[in-house]
Image (cartoon, rainbow, N blue to C red; front, side, top):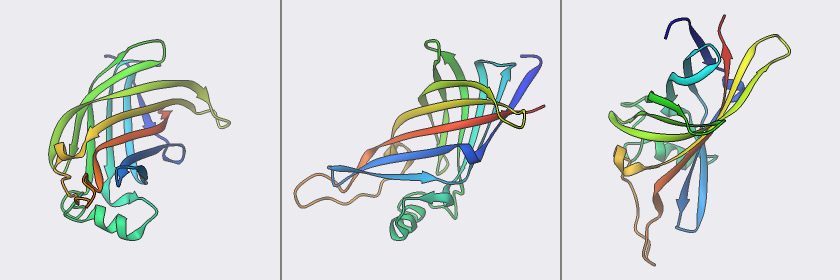
Length: 178
């Protein structure tokens, strides 16, 4: 692609969230508060765009200090050894008018696996300061055990404390670079 357009994440208008089933009955939600992402596109055409993202694992937040500390420990993210989760897109293809399939390599704790993410293009707009912006919503599901996030506890009633399936979603706003 010649004449690439660079888009940089606007973190104040973006979020990455996750949900995990707890006690097999309800979901516990959390978020990563620090992350960055870039898109390289052919103008405003996002077909075949290249996408990269980095998440600071130490920025995990679930509104519970003890749980956050546990998630940062060796039982889960081992933030001191693995400070980042990375995503490198391999393909971004239209499925419909505003629906895309994003495939790429997700790396957690040094383990890379391909994931497929459903993306909805929210559109383009200009903010009051004249910046061109692009908005996207995304969601996917992963099995945390594929990345070595294996900790769990059995329940007396059968089943487990924390589900293996993790639902990940987000709202991302990007600013077109001059």
